Length: 471
Image 1 (cartoon, rainbow, N blue to C red):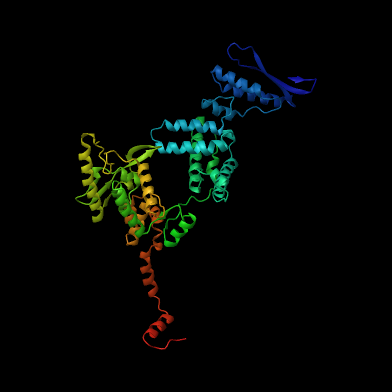
Image 2 (spheres, rainbow, N blue to C red):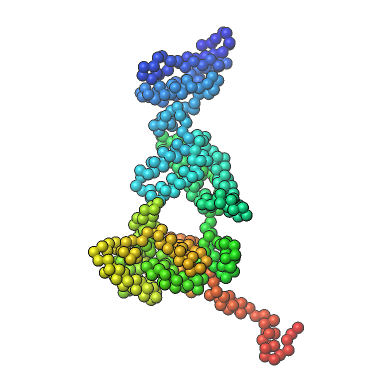
């Protein structure tokens, strides 16, 4: 209808009501033409039609229409249709935070998702994604929002690093216990967001969004840090400043030998496990989860088929990480001697424990027969390193040491890859890239240099034989 008082077109539409509610109508009268008024009326009818035969949804859409202020546009039909089909309230805009929480709940119901993966999802959502993106409407999330989040994360990490180097102890104390977010972690955070948003797109007729902004973000390279050797200069600088050349450090063979000597003297229960990792490069979980049947002392063979992982803090036995991780390896004679001595020592523990000895089936156990918790093994390792006054490395770095020493004595890269259970030789190459820093390589460097004839070298030889040097 047209109102001659203000010269504008208007429409009126009867709206569904909630039970017990009085009649209500949608009236809008701000249109310059009849076609504009009819177009919005039809838009409102199309929104109401989304309810189909559900009176509750119809009343909810009517609430939404009445809430639109004069002159403002009605909600987009396709957006509301996605919400209705997904079983979400039509009148409330889903935020990124709300969607991520519902998405995480749906992932928990899937048996195919590993517990540690769920823990990573939960951490990324709680620590980073919700604080930075949680209040943004899901349908309005853009690349700029995600870029701003990662910029803020990087700035926060930089601020922590600066505070750690401050001369003011109060400032240093303010960041104690805070963790920085490295590039590799940023890539994992983006992967979580990208997966969640891809699932929002893949919901078939219930798809909530049409575009994934996380798929269009460029981040700093998440390249793994290069391993470095604790050379004499590196050790001295660490003692003076506390700085490590790299997050991934490798001991020289002399340092590794000193550690094994110290471990044998001060922690005989775990010494064989540490020796095995250094000799054969097992992962922590593979060593802790090694079974009696997997250790063939007569034929000097070890079969790696399972590992003891942790879900949160709870230890669980599971298969090795990949098919390439399922492997058989030979033992050196010294390794067999160490493991055979452990086997005999364990028999004495069992005899002393009597009927209280548990049958775990594990090769490495505590003196009371109980399994080792992987975290306890790490704690004992770090304590031994400190007590031995050795430069610090991680327990996992013993595996890097094993790869480096094998390469130093001429082992083929493919053989090392199979020993470590890597699916890619590129990963193995990262572990063995430090070989040039070991003294064992000096002889090769000398031999290569000697192949190059030099006039000055010839002069030196003649001088030593009594000839007159050439000036």
